[in-house]
Image 1 (cartoon, one colour):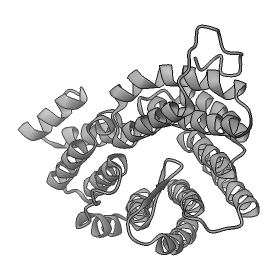
Image 2 (cartoon, helix red, strand yellow):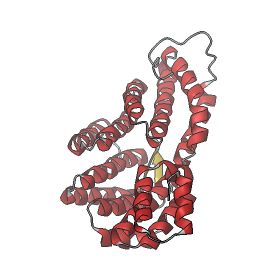
Image 3 (spheres, one colour):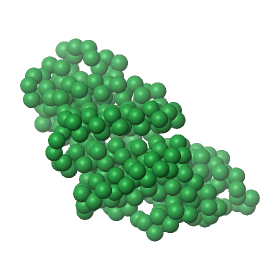
Image 4 (cartoon, one colour):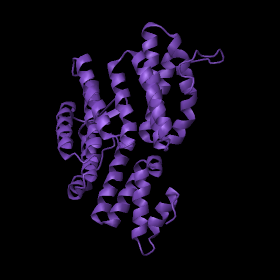
Length: 312
């Protein structure tokens, strides 16, 4: 299904109307945001087969719409592959996502593809090239989209948030501050609740979540704990974003030597986004360290480690 993405569809594929496929894509996107990976994996293959059949054979506006939907489908597939630990598969999907986005003739869809492409550079620790791609993508968006629509703010702001992650992991505190300042300015323009456009979440809450994570990566433990401890992501934020906050907060507490707070944060992550938490490598590593530090039996920690499939 992924391998034959650019081949003519077979006669056996009976695709539903675009309006129906759009509703299905929206449902799949909701599953991805909620971290419901098992259900996502059940629905994605057939949907991608249909979209792959429809998009190349459509014309005019229908063609652009179909390729836009296929872009969204590939984005959901990328998230599923990456979260389940299939990095090579995720990287392959990034190229197909870019292929579909170009044919959607939508610069914001292309921006999403570039934002997603950076994932492989981030995973490989190639932060400089990842930051370079983000710089070029923001410049391209600014040239092609002259208005300041909410979606444009979301895409541009999300690129700054991803740059914060890369810069913090490379230890560049000055770059983190620059991108964080830019993200705060854009979040102020968004105002109110965080927005979701082109599957990306941006606003004051997600900017705050990224700030906590950046302090953790930079080893600024006190700042991370201060920013994160009394902050509870609102229900309007996707569970995967809220869950990631608690995962980063757990890392901060562990670095600070507060083992009970570490476990509490991990349990918050589990309650908020259970499937994401179960498969997240940072959760597994944090739990392994926590288990190694406990010289006495801790029933809650043992149960949590067992839920992850680890030996406590």
